[in-house]
Length: 97
Length: 455
Image (cartoon, rainbow over all chains, first blue to last red; front, side):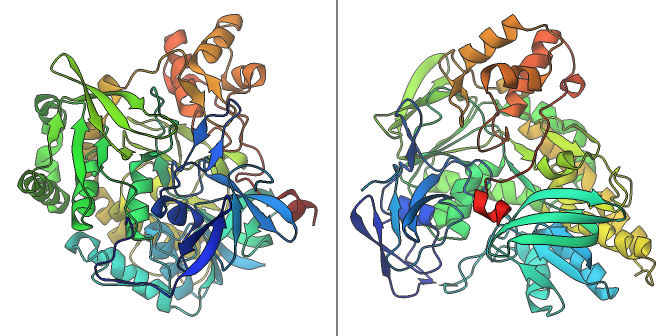
């Protein structure tokens, strides 16, 4: 796994949903870190349908925009700045799943 | 109305806050990250415990400053918050914030210490998931304690790659290779004029030597003179292509970390109309300031990479200078130490010049193809940009090209592509990039939900 285990203590895992799959995450982690740790490098598609992923990991480039279900609507957020929470539902395409 | 708003919680902002708080000025610090530290000390989540985090000797002064900042209850810390807008209204400033502490903030003085970001360099396949900036790979490691992928290839002209390679090895990652396009001879010639001066700040030079020895022991190929060509893969990165001794080579990789230098964050200074100039050698726009870090806008100060990429030690010194200047200009009893901080900043310059010369991507810039996307937000290719430029007068500035083909009109506000467009216009005109008028930086500086603005 790509999470460093040696010398790192994390809070007990929670679960988030990414494109319909249940993925483990730890409170405090960013969505980008959780997706990369799960091998989910694709975070959105461009106009031609080509996949895109994390580029700067500091909120500057906006490449890592994903869709998040919030208050009954899909909102776009930068995955690198968004922290996970229990049951968070993430989609890499609008309104999916 | 507060006395001081500091944009950026890195070394520059923290050093400034110590001065302004010490002078009794109410101080608010805003940062997009949840915790202070900046990118250099991007902290793990508060709920994590990480043994020996950033324990290296070179980080010690930064860690001490961070501990002092976090312990200072006078500081109004607003993490998880983006600054989308900055305006000057009569004798004060209005900041428009988004995120955890959204809303507006009125301040008598503002320090922009917003740092820098990895220069995005367009090359074939660079939009494939798995191709990241070196900074992204490093902050995933430092903060999230996640390895971005393995095997991982590190490539580019910046010696930061050596530091990153050792950090990845420490994390147990499989580093496939470090590919640097400049030869040993070229780098030696570039740094030679600065060596004598840099000997007074030997720490980073010793660290670079130790890093190279560490890579050798670990069996990681460190290839100087290996020119990165591009990235290939089906839906995600699978391999990196590079030229080595006249042959095209391919090396398998799940992730790649790219570093050709850093660009100052310049959107907020430019939005409010502060004077900027082209940064050398890596490019982008650095904000002009006087010896006390005052920008061309009265009441607006700049420090750290915003004034030109120079590293964390210079940022600490500049932040201290800016903090002292703000206290002086506010008319409160001035803290002493201005001359000492300025001397400390001056002593760092030879090493900064050395690093800039060593990292200079000038002659070893990777080649984009006509299909390569230059603007990653609006999906505008090199061919589209060249065709647009051909239709316009050679004197057309960056905004004219933007209006015609949408380059730079996307969510990143041109932070990824503008530097490349400015270089292309300058090359076509045969002029210096500083003579090209860049995009106008508009509100909002960060992508923010529309309902946050209309409330």
